[in-house]
Image (cartoon, rainbow, N blue to C red):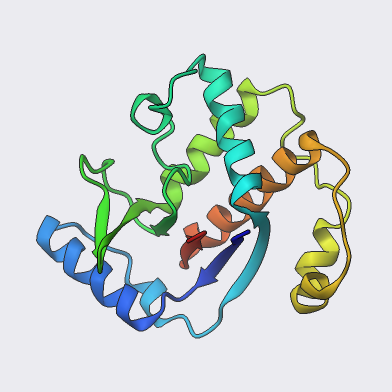
Length: 185
């Protein structure tokens, strides 16, 4: 099963180049701070299944039950794609929010818009989003040890809380000048 690791800081070279090309094509202003970051922080969102559990919860909040959740949702900044990138800066949601990486489209959004959507989802949900699940701070304190541990989460509610909190923390860090990348491929 694919791991879902949210990387916060700098994008890998080829991906940064593809993002730069796309932003230039769209003539979009970009906060240059994220290009200069040397550090990368990682947040575990467990795996593709856990992220889908979260996005399914959001679709349920919206009353969307079809298989076209990604097209019907108003929360366009969520990780509906196998690979998603968010950069600091404010621009309107793109009609075709994709960067082409080989044969795969990669979502391109903004950290500010992701944060705003997550705050709106928090208000709509009865899942106590914003609660820091057991083990989350351990993961943030020592990511490598956490990834080698036998940590397990108790239930679906905690998974949804964890994914929301990880995305929100990432978006908060991104707003201060970092790029985010979630690759579940």
